[in-house]
Length: 388
Ligand SMILES: *Cc1c(COP(=O)(O)O)cnc(C)c1O
Image (cartoon, rainbow, N blue to C red; front, side):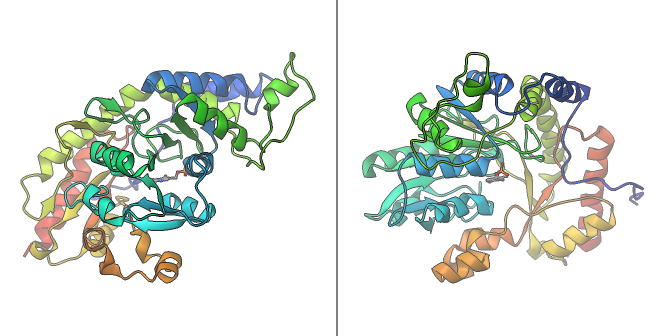
Protein backbone atom coordinates (compact mmCIF):
# COMPACT_ATOMS: atom_id res chain seq x y z
CA UNK A 1 0.00 0.00 0.00
CA UNK A 2 1.23 3.40 -0.97
CA UNK A 3 1.29 5.92 1.87
CA UNK A 4 0.10 9.11 0.24
CA UNK A 5 2.40 12.10 0.63
CA UNK A 6 1.11 15.29 2.22
CA UNK A 7 2.70 17.82 -0.12
CA UNK A 8 2.31 18.00 -3.87
CA UNK A 9 5.35 16.92 -5.88
CA UNK A 10 5.48 19.32 -8.82
CA UNK A 11 6.17 18.05 -12.33
CA UNK A 12 8.99 20.56 -12.74
CA UNK A 13 10.81 22.91 -10.46
CA UNK A 14 13.83 25.16 -11.14
CA UNK A 15 17.08 24.11 -9.44
CA UNK A 16 18.21 27.44 -7.99
CA UNK A 17 20.67 28.07 -5.17
CA UNK A 18 21.92 31.03 -3.13
CA UNK A 19 24.54 31.46 -5.85
CA UNK A 20 21.94 32.48 -8.44
CA UNK A 21 20.32 34.78 -5.86
CA UNK A 22 23.67 36.49 -5.16
CA UNK A 23 24.49 36.78 -8.86
CA UNK A 24 21.17 38.51 -9.54
CA UNK A 25 21.54 40.84 -6.54
CA UNK A 26 25.10 41.73 -7.51
CA UNK A 27 23.90 42.58 -11.01
CA UNK A 28 21.10 44.75 -9.62
CA UNK A 29 23.71 46.62 -7.57
CA UNK A 30 26.14 46.96 -10.48
CA UNK A 31 24.26 49.81 -12.23
CA UNK A 32 24.04 47.78 -15.48
CA UNK A 33 20.90 45.62 -15.57
CA UNK A 34 20.08 45.04 -19.22
CA UNK A 35 22.18 43.50 -22.03
CA UNK A 36 25.82 44.17 -21.15
CA UNK A 37 28.92 42.53 -19.71
CA UNK A 38 27.12 39.57 -18.05
CA UNK A 39 25.32 38.78 -21.29
CA UNK A 40 28.56 38.99 -23.29
CA UNK A 41 30.24 36.65 -20.84
CA UNK A 42 27.27 34.23 -20.90
CA UNK A 43 27.39 34.11 -24.71
CA UNK A 44 31.13 33.42 -24.70
CA UNK A 45 31.01 30.75 -22.00
CA UNK A 46 27.99 29.07 -23.60
CA UNK A 47 29.71 28.93 -27.00
CA UNK A 48 32.88 27.55 -25.38
CA UNK A 49 30.90 24.96 -23.42
CA UNK A 50 29.34 23.60 -26.63
CA UNK A 51 32.31 24.21 -28.91
CA UNK A 52 30.10 26.44 -31.07
CA UNK A 53 31.66 29.17 -33.22
CA UNK A 54 29.34 31.89 -31.93
CA UNK A 55 26.34 32.44 -29.65
CA UNK A 56 23.64 35.10 -29.29
CA UNK A 57 21.73 35.45 -26.00
CA UNK A 58 18.02 36.16 -26.45
CA UNK A 59 14.88 36.51 -24.35
CA UNK A 60 13.53 33.12 -25.51
CA UNK A 61 14.13 30.06 -27.66
CA UNK A 62 11.11 31.14 -29.69
CA UNK A 63 12.91 34.41 -30.49
CA UNK A 64 15.95 32.37 -31.55
CA UNK A 65 13.90 30.20 -33.91
CA UNK A 66 12.17 33.27 -35.36
CA UNK A 67 15.51 35.05 -35.90
CA UNK A 68 16.99 31.90 -37.46
CA UNK A 69 14.25 31.88 -40.11
CA UNK A 70 14.61 35.64 -40.72
CA UNK A 71 18.42 35.46 -40.87
CA UNK A 72 18.27 32.67 -43.44
CA UNK A 73 15.83 34.69 -45.55
CA UNK A 74 12.84 32.37 -45.18
CA UNK A 75 9.49 34.01 -45.87
CA UNK A 76 6.23 33.96 -47.86
CA UNK A 77 6.01 31.18 -50.46
CA UNK A 78 8.57 29.03 -48.63
CA UNK A 79 7.95 25.75 -46.81
CA UNK A 80 9.64 24.57 -43.63
CA UNK A 81 9.46 20.93 -42.55
CA UNK A 82 9.09 20.23 -38.84
CA UNK A 83 7.67 17.61 -36.49
CA UNK A 84 4.13 17.36 -35.12
CA UNK A 85 5.56 16.20 -31.77
CA UNK A 86 6.63 19.59 -30.45
CA UNK A 87 5.59 22.70 -28.61
CA UNK A 88 3.58 25.22 -30.64
CA UNK A 89 6.52 27.66 -30.81
CA UNK A 90 8.40 25.49 -33.34
CA UNK A 91 5.52 25.84 -35.80
CA UNK A 92 4.33 29.35 -34.82
CA UNK A 93 7.63 30.94 -35.88
CA UNK A 94 7.20 29.48 -39.37
CA UNK A 95 3.81 31.21 -39.53
CA UNK A 96 5.37 34.44 -38.20
CA UNK A 97 7.62 34.74 -41.26
CA UNK A 98 4.72 33.93 -43.60
CA UNK A 99 6.07 30.53 -44.64
CA UNK A 100 4.07 27.28 -44.66
CA UNK A 101 4.37 24.61 -42.00
CA UNK A 102 4.94 21.14 -43.43
CA UNK A 103 4.82 18.29 -40.91
CA UNK A 104 6.73 15.03 -41.16
CA UNK A 105 5.70 12.22 -38.82
CA UNK A 106 7.96 10.85 -36.09
CA UNK A 107 9.82 7.58 -35.56
CA UNK A 108 7.87 5.25 -33.26
CA UNK A 109 10.69 4.53 -30.81
CA UNK A 110 12.23 7.96 -30.20
CA UNK A 111 9.27 10.14 -31.29
CA UNK A 112 11.80 12.24 -33.23
CA UNK A 113 11.19 13.52 -36.76
CA UNK A 114 11.61 10.64 -39.22
CA UNK A 115 14.13 11.42 -41.99
CA UNK A 116 12.16 9.18 -44.40
CA UNK A 117 9.03 11.26 -43.76
CA UNK A 118 11.12 14.41 -44.23
CA UNK A 119 12.35 13.10 -47.60
CA UNK A 120 8.74 12.47 -48.68
CA UNK A 121 7.75 16.04 -47.73
CA UNK A 122 10.38 17.96 -49.73
CA UNK A 123 9.05 20.09 -52.60
CA UNK A 124 10.45 22.88 -54.83
CA UNK A 125 9.32 25.34 -52.17
CA UNK A 126 11.06 23.69 -49.21
CA UNK A 127 13.70 26.01 -47.72
CA UNK A 128 14.53 24.46 -44.36
CA UNK A 129 14.19 21.48 -42.07
CA UNK A 130 13.45 22.29 -38.43
CA UNK A 131 14.07 19.19 -36.31
CA UNK A 132 13.24 19.26 -32.60
CA UNK A 133 15.46 17.29 -30.24
CA UNK A 134 12.43 15.94 -28.42
CA UNK A 135 12.89 15.21 -24.70
CA UNK A 136 16.60 16.00 -25.08
CA UNK A 137 17.40 13.14 -27.46
CA UNK A 138 19.06 14.37 -30.66
CA UNK A 139 17.18 13.85 -33.92
CA UNK A 140 18.74 11.71 -36.69
CA UNK A 141 21.01 14.51 -37.87
CA UNK A 142 23.18 12.77 -40.49
CA UNK A 143 20.26 11.69 -42.71
CA UNK A 144 18.71 15.14 -42.17
CA UNK A 145 21.97 16.92 -43.13
CA UNK A 146 22.28 14.66 -46.20
CA UNK A 147 18.78 15.61 -47.33
CA UNK A 148 19.55 19.28 -46.69
CA UNK A 149 22.76 19.09 -48.74
CA UNK A 150 21.06 17.26 -51.61
CA UNK A 151 18.17 19.75 -51.80
CA UNK A 152 20.05 22.93 -50.71
CA UNK A 153 18.02 23.37 -47.53
CA UNK A 154 18.93 25.02 -44.26
CA UNK A 155 18.80 23.09 -40.99
CA UNK A 156 17.47 25.01 -37.98
CA UNK A 157 17.41 23.00 -34.76
CA UNK A 158 14.97 23.46 -31.91
CA UNK A 159 17.23 22.47 -29.02
CA UNK A 160 14.91 23.74 -26.27
CA UNK A 161 15.30 20.32 -24.58
CA UNK A 162 18.80 19.45 -25.71
CA UNK A 163 21.30 21.08 -23.37
CA UNK A 164 23.66 19.26 -23.39
CA UNK A 165 23.19 16.49 -25.95
CA UNK A 166 25.32 14.91 -28.64
CA UNK A 167 24.87 12.94 -31.85
CA UNK A 168 27.70 10.66 -33.02
CA UNK A 169 30.08 12.64 -30.83
CA UNK A 170 28.94 16.01 -32.20
CA UNK A 171 27.44 18.43 -29.69
CA UNK A 172 23.96 19.76 -30.39
CA UNK A 173 24.50 23.44 -31.14
CA UNK A 174 27.39 22.74 -33.52
CA UNK A 175 25.59 20.58 -36.10
CA UNK A 176 23.00 22.45 -38.21
CA UNK A 177 23.07 26.02 -39.58
CA UNK A 178 21.48 27.60 -36.51
CA UNK A 179 20.40 26.05 -33.21
CA UNK A 180 18.09 27.59 -30.62
CA UNK A 181 18.17 26.72 -26.89
CA UNK A 182 15.62 27.62 -24.20
CA UNK A 183 16.22 28.84 -20.66
CA UNK A 184 12.54 28.83 -19.72
CA UNK A 185 11.82 28.06 -16.04
CA UNK A 186 11.39 24.31 -16.56
CA UNK A 187 14.33 23.73 -18.91
CA UNK A 188 17.67 22.06 -18.03
CA UNK A 189 19.29 25.48 -17.55
CA UNK A 190 17.09 28.40 -16.61
CA UNK A 191 17.23 32.18 -16.55
CA UNK A 192 13.44 32.31 -15.81
CA UNK A 193 12.96 33.25 -19.47
CA UNK A 194 15.72 33.24 -22.05
CA UNK A 195 17.34 31.56 -24.99
CA UNK A 196 20.55 31.22 -26.97
CA UNK A 197 21.10 30.92 -30.71
CA UNK A 198 24.32 29.24 -31.85
CA UNK A 199 25.95 28.94 -35.25
CA UNK A 200 28.61 30.40 -37.52
CA UNK A 201 29.72 33.92 -36.58
CA UNK A 202 28.53 35.47 -39.82
CA UNK A 203 24.96 34.20 -39.30
CA UNK A 204 24.98 35.00 -35.58
CA UNK A 205 26.08 38.60 -36.24
CA UNK A 206 23.24 39.01 -38.75
CA UNK A 207 20.81 37.59 -36.17
CA UNK A 208 22.29 39.95 -33.55
CA UNK A 209 21.37 42.99 -35.61
CA UNK A 210 17.82 41.68 -36.02
CA UNK A 211 17.61 40.93 -32.28
CA UNK A 212 17.79 44.58 -31.23
CA UNK A 213 15.67 46.80 -33.48
CA UNK A 214 18.01 46.28 -36.42
CA UNK A 215 20.41 48.78 -34.88
CA UNK A 216 24.02 48.79 -35.96
CA UNK A 217 25.27 48.89 -32.33
CA UNK A 218 23.78 47.74 -29.03
CA UNK A 219 23.04 49.74 -25.87
CA UNK A 220 26.20 48.60 -24.11
CA UNK A 221 28.28 50.06 -26.90
CA UNK A 222 26.16 53.22 -26.95
CA UNK A 223 25.84 53.98 -23.23
CA UNK A 224 29.09 52.44 -22.00
CA UNK A 225 32.08 54.70 -21.34
CA UNK A 226 33.49 54.24 -24.84
CA UNK A 227 30.05 54.55 -26.43
CA UNK A 228 28.68 57.01 -28.90
CA UNK A 229 25.13 58.27 -29.36
CA UNK A 230 25.17 57.42 -33.06
CA UNK A 231 23.53 54.33 -34.50
CA UNK A 232 21.88 53.31 -37.72
CA UNK A 233 18.83 51.11 -38.23
CA UNK A 234 19.81 48.77 -41.04
CA UNK A 235 16.85 46.32 -40.91
CA UNK A 236 13.43 46.47 -39.19
CA UNK A 237 14.52 44.33 -36.26
CA UNK A 238 12.91 42.96 -33.13
CA UNK A 239 13.29 43.41 -29.36
CA UNK A 240 14.69 40.03 -28.37
CA UNK A 241 17.69 40.79 -26.14
CA UNK A 242 18.48 39.06 -22.83
CA UNK A 243 19.09 41.16 -19.71
CA UNK A 244 22.23 41.04 -17.57
CA UNK A 245 20.05 40.07 -14.58
CA UNK A 246 19.09 36.89 -16.43
CA UNK A 247 22.56 36.30 -17.88
CA UNK A 248 24.00 36.44 -14.34
CA UNK A 249 21.68 33.56 -13.42
CA UNK A 250 22.62 31.75 -16.60
CA UNK A 251 26.35 31.94 -15.84
CA UNK A 252 25.82 30.31 -12.44
CA UNK A 253 23.55 27.66 -13.94
CA UNK A 254 26.02 26.92 -16.74
CA UNK A 255 28.81 26.36 -14.23
CA UNK A 256 26.56 23.86 -12.43
CA UNK A 257 25.04 22.24 -15.53
CA UNK A 258 27.13 19.03 -15.53
CA UNK A 259 26.29 18.44 -11.89
CA UNK A 260 22.57 18.99 -12.54
CA UNK A 261 22.76 16.64 -15.54
CA UNK A 262 24.32 13.95 -13.38
CA UNK A 263 21.32 14.11 -11.07
CA UNK A 264 18.93 13.87 -14.06
CA UNK A 265 20.79 10.78 -15.26
CA UNK A 266 20.55 9.17 -11.82
CA UNK A 267 16.80 9.71 -11.73
CA UNK A 268 16.46 8.32 -15.26
CA UNK A 269 18.44 5.21 -14.24
CA UNK A 270 16.13 4.68 -11.26
CA UNK A 271 12.99 5.04 -13.44
CA UNK A 272 14.44 2.72 -16.10
CA UNK A 273 15.29 0.08 -13.53
CA UNK A 274 11.83 0.23 -11.99
CA UNK A 275 9.74 0.36 -15.16
CA UNK A 276 11.57 -1.47 -17.94
CA UNK A 277 10.40 -4.91 -16.82
CA UNK A 278 6.75 -3.93 -16.45
CA UNK A 279 4.80 -5.05 -19.54
CA UNK A 280 2.19 -2.33 -18.92
CA UNK A 281 4.80 0.36 -19.50
CA UNK A 282 7.24 1.39 -22.22
CA UNK A 283 10.30 3.35 -21.16
CA UNK A 284 12.04 5.98 -23.33
CA UNK A 285 15.01 4.86 -25.42
CA UNK A 286 18.43 6.34 -26.02
CA UNK A 287 20.20 5.32 -29.22
CA UNK A 288 23.73 4.02 -28.58
CA UNK A 289 25.44 6.72 -30.66
CA UNK A 290 23.47 9.49 -28.95
CA UNK A 291 23.69 11.20 -25.61
CA UNK A 292 20.39 12.66 -24.45
CA UNK A 293 20.05 15.76 -22.28
CA UNK A 294 17.15 13.94 -20.58
CA UNK A 295 14.98 17.01 -20.34
CA UNK A 296 11.91 14.78 -20.11
CA UNK A 297 11.17 11.24 -19.01
CA UNK A 298 8.32 10.27 -21.32
CA UNK A 299 6.70 7.05 -20.23
CA UNK A 300 4.27 5.30 -22.56
CA UNK A 301 1.35 3.24 -21.30
CA UNK A 302 0.63 -0.08 -22.98
CA UNK A 303 -3.05 0.68 -22.73
CA UNK A 304 -4.10 -2.75 -24.03
CA UNK A 305 -2.74 -4.15 -20.75
CA UNK A 306 -4.45 -1.56 -18.54
CA UNK A 307 -8.07 -0.81 -17.71
CA UNK A 308 -7.39 2.93 -17.76
CA UNK A 309 -6.23 5.35 -20.41
CA UNK A 310 -3.58 8.05 -20.17
CA UNK A 311 -5.88 10.83 -18.94
CA UNK A 312 -7.08 8.76 -16.03
CA UNK A 313 -3.51 7.72 -15.28
CA UNK A 314 -2.70 11.43 -14.89
CA UNK A 315 -5.68 11.82 -12.54
CA UNK A 316 -4.49 8.84 -10.50
CA UNK A 317 -1.03 10.42 -10.24
CA UNK A 318 -2.64 13.67 -9.14
CA UNK A 319 -4.62 11.78 -6.47
CA UNK A 320 -1.24 10.56 -5.24
CA UNK A 321 0.01 14.18 -5.14
CA UNK A 322 2.30 13.92 -8.17
CA UNK A 323 2.37 16.39 -11.05
CA UNK A 324 2.83 14.99 -14.56
CA UNK A 325 2.53 16.48 -18.02
CA UNK A 326 1.95 15.59 -21.67
CA UNK A 327 4.61 16.39 -24.28
CA UNK A 328 3.06 17.21 -26.61
CA UNK A 329 -0.42 17.71 -28.01
CA UNK A 330 0.66 17.26 -31.65
CA UNK A 331 0.73 20.45 -33.74
CA UNK A 332 -1.85 19.18 -36.25
CA UNK A 333 -4.51 18.76 -33.55
CA UNK A 334 -4.47 22.44 -32.53
CA UNK A 335 -7.44 24.30 -34.09
CA UNK A 336 -5.34 26.94 -35.87
CA UNK A 337 -3.20 24.36 -37.68
CA UNK A 338 -5.97 21.80 -38.11
CA UNK A 339 -8.20 24.39 -39.79
CA UNK A 340 -5.57 26.26 -41.83
CA UNK A 341 -3.99 23.12 -43.29
CA UNK A 342 -7.05 20.84 -43.17
CA UNK A 343 -5.17 18.23 -41.17
CA UNK A 344 -6.87 15.13 -39.75
CA UNK A 345 -5.54 13.34 -36.63
CA UNK A 346 -4.39 10.31 -38.63
CA UNK A 347 -2.50 12.38 -41.21
CA UNK A 348 0.46 11.88 -38.83
CA UNK A 349 -0.54 8.53 -37.34
CA UNK A 350 2.49 7.83 -35.17
CA UNK A 351 2.44 11.23 -33.49
CA UNK A 352 -1.31 10.95 -32.97
CA UNK A 353 -1.36 7.41 -31.60
CA UNK A 354 1.67 7.82 -29.35
CA UNK A 355 0.33 11.14 -28.03
CA UNK A 356 -2.64 9.28 -26.62
CA UNK A 357 -0.53 7.01 -24.43
CA UNK A 358 2.35 9.16 -23.27
CA UNK A 359 2.91 10.91 -19.97
CA UNK A 360 5.95 12.80 -18.68
CA UNK A 361 7.06 12.00 -15.12
CA UNK A 362 8.77 14.51 -12.80
CA UNK A 363 12.45 14.79 -13.79
CA UNK A 364 14.58 17.57 -12.37
CA UNK A 365 17.74 17.90 -10.25
CA UNK A 366 15.87 18.97 -7.12
CA UNK A 367 14.19 15.55 -6.77
CA UNK A 368 15.35 13.71 -3.67
CA UNK A 369 15.79 9.93 -3.48
CA UNK A 370 12.57 9.84 -1.44
CA UNK A 371 10.75 11.75 -4.19
CA UNK A 372 11.99 9.29 -6.81
CA UNK A 373 11.05 6.30 -4.64
CA UNK A 374 7.61 7.79 -4.19
CA UNK A 375 7.05 8.40 -7.93
CA UNK A 376 8.10 4.81 -8.66
CA UNK A 377 5.84 3.42 -5.94
CA UNK A 378 2.91 5.52 -7.14
CA UNK A 379 3.29 4.37 -10.77
CA UNK A 380 3.55 0.74 -9.64
CA UNK A 381 0.54 1.20 -7.36
CA UNK A 382 -1.59 2.51 -10.25
CA UNK A 383 -0.43 -0.27 -12.58
CA UNK A 384 -1.25 -2.92 -9.98
CA UNK A 385 -4.67 -1.43 -9.38
CA UNK A 386 -5.58 -1.21 -13.07
CA UNK A 387 -3.73 -3.99 -14.89
CA UNK A 388 -5.96 -6.28 -16.99
C1 LIG B 1 10.08 25.33 -24.29
C2 LIG B 1 10.09 25.04 -25.74
C3 LIG B 1 10.20 26.05 -26.71
C4 LIG B 1 10.09 27.51 -26.38
O1 LIG B 1 11.04 27.97 -25.53
P1 LIG B 1 10.90 29.47 -24.99
O2 LIG B 1 12.26 29.75 -24.42
O3 LIG B 1 9.83 29.45 -23.96
O4 LIG B 1 10.57 30.34 -26.15
C5 LIG B 1 10.36 25.70 -28.04
N1 LIG B 1 10.35 24.41 -28.41
C6 LIG B 1 10.21 23.41 -27.53
C7 LIG B 1 10.23 22.00 -28.02
C8 LIG B 1 10.04 23.70 -26.16
O5 LIG B 1 9.85 22.70 -25.29
